[in-house]
Amino acid sequence: MLSLFETDTCLSHRLAAYFADEHAPAQCGHCSVCRGNIARLPKASAQESVEPAMLQRLIQPLMDAAFKEDVAVSAEAATRFLCGIATPLSTRLRAGKMEGFGKLSAYPFDEVKKLVQSLAI
Image (tube, rainbow, N blue to C red; front, side, top):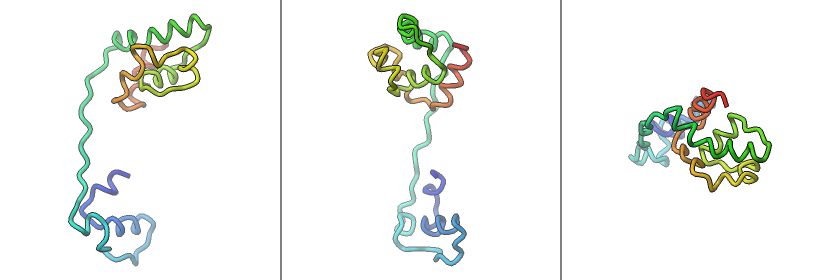
């Protein structure tokens, strides 16, 4: 989707070509590119690596609360916690007030999930 907008060719023409409309004009005259405003999205900044010990420290309050409530915490639930995504489980455990909640919200969800899965919680 992002590559659709980061182009120097008419957006309408690109969209039409995607849907196999070969009769669309090469320039619509209305889109940002035709008006001379080519979009340049900022590149994602490199994130610091997350050490397993730090990850474990961030997750531990959640795990402790879940143990007290006799509730299992999946890797998916721990990832949501670290990314700051509220769920019924996090509400039940009052996780939003814990130090680790949302600490990795700037990281891609799938990347955080792989890190959590590497801990084998």
